[in-house]
Amino acid sequence: MDGGVRVSWIKCGPLVSLFVVLLALWFRSPQDADLDERLDAVLSSLLRAERKVGISDVNRPKVAIGFGGCVDLLVDGVSLLNEIGLTPAEEPYHHNYLENEVQLAQSFAYFFAPGAAAERFMINDTLFSELVDASRDLPGNRWAIGGNAPVMAGRMATEGCDVLLAGSFSPDFTDVLSQHIIVAGNVVEEQDIHLILEYPSGAKWGKYTSHRANRYIVHSDDHNPYLASLEDFAQNLMHFKPDLLVVGGLQMMDNFPFQSGEREALLSRLADVLSTSSSQTGVHFEMASFVEERIMEDLLRYVIPHSDSLGMNEQELPNLLSLLKGSTITVLSDPNPRVATVLDQMREVYRILNRRHRDASADGVGVKPLTRLHVHTLAFQAMIVTRGSRWKNTMSATAKASLTANRHVCGSDDIDPSKARLIMDESFSVSRREGSQRIPLQEERPVSCWDEDDYEICVAPVLVCTEVYQTAGGGDNISAAGLVLQI
Image (cartoon, one colour):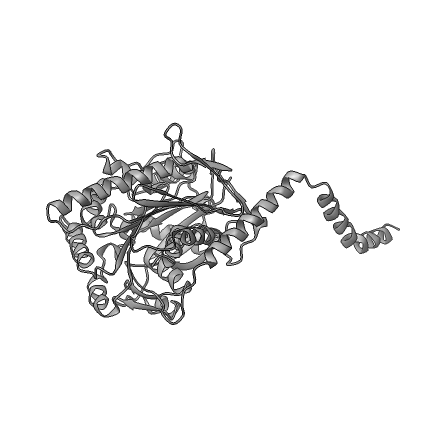
């Protein structure tokens, strides 16, 4: 009898499941249905905005990108730390670089709880090798092409560009690159490994709980800091004649043990290459996690003055602004800032850098004005573009950047609204100044654009992925996708 009942239940299983689903839909709250409709409408509108601009297969834009590259080994961060028996730190603490397990635990806790992205150099080769060995055996680990330049190159090739990539790569590395990517640089036998400790929102490590999905990167890279491919890259630029030159990966120099004057000499040579590029070539500098004040000052001297476009996240923006205003580096900022706060910071960076340009020009020094600033956050994308500058299609580019954020983090070109949510407010203030205009988020026109002074501002909501596949490389993919439609 019991067996018969069990068989009947198995036969009825699909019918019961269907009944449960129908019951859930029947009792589904109107509010949930409204949210679904809103997400669908925002997605459709963003896709329309993205499709307004196409890229010709005949006249593919040409982009030159440096520097360096690595192989990323992606693992669940908490699982790795548990695997090596690392006890959660009693108190979080910021370290510029890592020497031992205690510092790793303190530094990871410092960024893990707020869910802020971070990248640190580990001078202890033995400890780093132990971490890599443990990661190789960890279930669910993944290998991927890493480094700002190769990741941006891959995205731009996918989106329709021909790319010149500067870096020293192994044959196995170059074999998996797109056919639209040409490499300038030396061949190395073994590629550097960077460990990507990923974690989802709500992950727990001891008494710490992450407030958003992100990653903590640790490396012991002693090749990429030297920009070994710079001379080959410079020679190839003359023949390649790019429409856009992109610089990234310079965070590898942060807290690296160079000899005295060595880093300054490398950056000075890079400045020469940037300053002698064609006036028809736009130059974009992609920021990263810098914690050493001296290298930030070097970037302000050697790289940023020769760049007319900057890309960064919500941590890097206040970091740069703080230094521009004569203060110290801001290591950790609000990981979920309001739109008004970000826009005010962007305006100030734009104003200060262009004032420096005017002062330098008056003294006869060749410095480029900043004409494009792109900040990518979890909740939204924001761009400032000077009217009449080389950068075009700002509205569509902001929409594409927003869509790329979801595509990359979810690991799918097709965006599924059931795996996304809007966390941007239903309306936002354009500034923190009292009496500032508020702009509602309109489902049919989700990208809000308006003019101020000599520039246009565009803001687009992000359909935040709720089933995270990968956060590492998100900023590089987002920035690259936005640039593609503007060159």
